Amino acid sequence: MRFVIIGAGRVGLRTGRVLREEGHEVTLIERDEAKIRRARNQEFPVVDGDGSRESVLEDAGVANADVLGALTADLNVNFTACMIAKHYGCRTVMRIDEGYREEIYRKYADEVDEVIYPERLGALGAKNALLGGTIRAVADVAPNLQVVEVTVSDAAPVNGYTMDELELPANATILAFGKREADLEIPSADESLEDGDRIVVLADFDVLSDVRQLLVGESPERATVNAGTGGVN
Image (cartoon, rainbow, N blue to C red; front, side, top):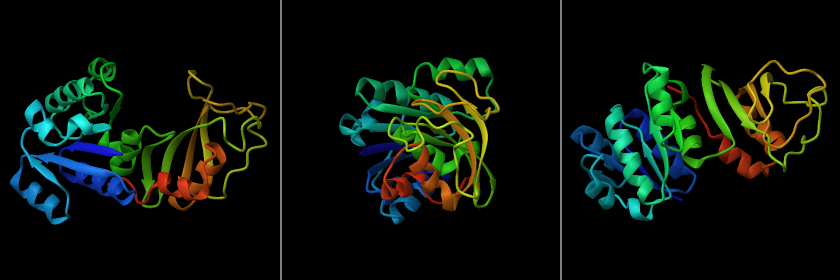
């Protein structure tokens, strides 16, 4: 897949590295000279300019991109870039800081494909949002421990199991459960697992791929790639 990421700061650059390691094409947009040099030293193609300008986005290849990630600290730049990218048929993922009020979040969330909080999600969560996957980071609680929300797929080996029958790896614990479109809550033992249900799991990074295999039904190789490596900083 082809990605255009606006912002070569800590979140943008680390997200770009994770995506590139998985074989995706990544182009960065940045206007800070020091950040541009750092990104180019890591062999990223970088367009020097304002990511909210259509001409700059075109220079970065937005017309041929699959996804645009607006990951700067400037909400106006991020939103404008996403609105432009939508006209090119891109999936749009926009960074927003947690300090914004709920009504502002809802206003922007309705206009883009996904809103992320980098303070909470970091590079792994941003990568999952860009890919539009079925697992997303919620929070890091220790260097190698993360809370993730997983969406059960039709191909999951545990599809049709009850919560009492579900056995996760030793270093993974279920925190909450929600039926499709329903609120998350503490699960009951006889609750059945179905396509579209969501499970919040506290898991060690080492077993995230095992969790994906069980709840999403991915192959071991794909589950390992999608689980990612490292945490939120």
